[in-house]
Length: 56
Image (cartoon, rainbow, N blue to C red; front, side, top):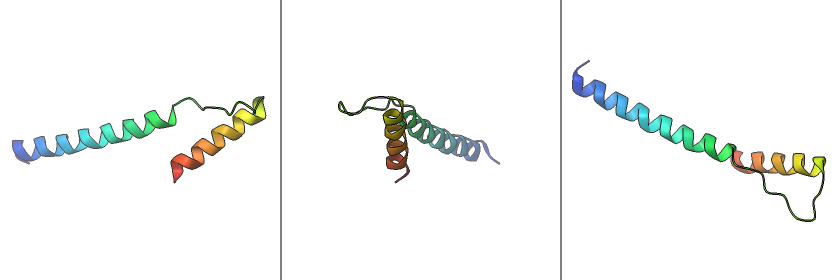
């Protein structure tokens, strides 16, 4: 592999890692609850809905 090919491969890998980091960052975002929802089960439901929305 030439230096130029190695540099291109590393650049592409870095771009892929940046993309994965951005996706992971979205998954770590706090869950926003509706004001009328209260309690632990409501939070779990909100987290599930957020996960399903991200999976789409």
